[in-house]
Amino acid sequence: GLPLAVTISLAYSMRKMMKDNNFVRVLAACETMGGATAICSDKTGTLTENRMTVVKGWFCGAMHDDVPAPEALPQEAVQALGINVAMTSKPDGKTEFQGNRTECALLVMLKRWAMDYRTLQQEQKAALFQLFGFSSERKMSSCVMRADTKYVVYNKGAAEWVLRKCTTQMGAQGQVLPLDEAQRQDLADNVV
Figure 1 (spheres, rainbow, N blue to C red):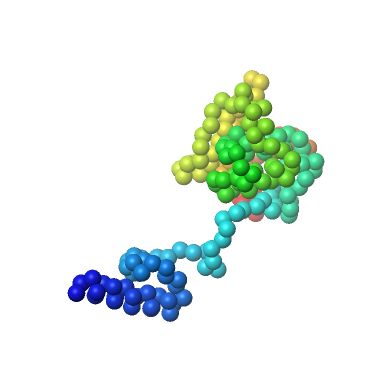
Figure 2: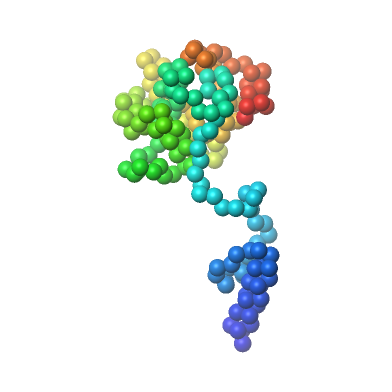
């Protein structure tokens, strides 16, 4: 009688869940759901395609409500952004990008700017010193590049974590400007 009792109780649970507008495909899932203490979903409760797109951003000291054309930014900024994205990307030989959705959104932005990240990887391969993959402790990925007599670190990740590490910022003409604590706090409060 035990298998019958379990099946009847699961069917009963499934009916109650259906009345709550929960979609149940597998009867045994009711048993698992019965043990759940929290269910997380987005604010509308819908599932998405998991595709992200860059629609606006903070570029060279100014907020842009849409993605600027590469000609509107200093060449140094476009090159730096390209290197930052390209060096931690992994080619998959397909037209669609796979992997981290934020990374894919940045790769699509480079593609719209007519920049091929594979070409950038090949061009910059000799200058690459070390890669640090994304980790939940650091909340960012980094690549260290040799540039003449110095090293340049490109970080990509959670904006508030990357901002804490910044000591300079790039200006509208591509000049390197100091980033003091007051400016950093202003960016954290009003941009991030």
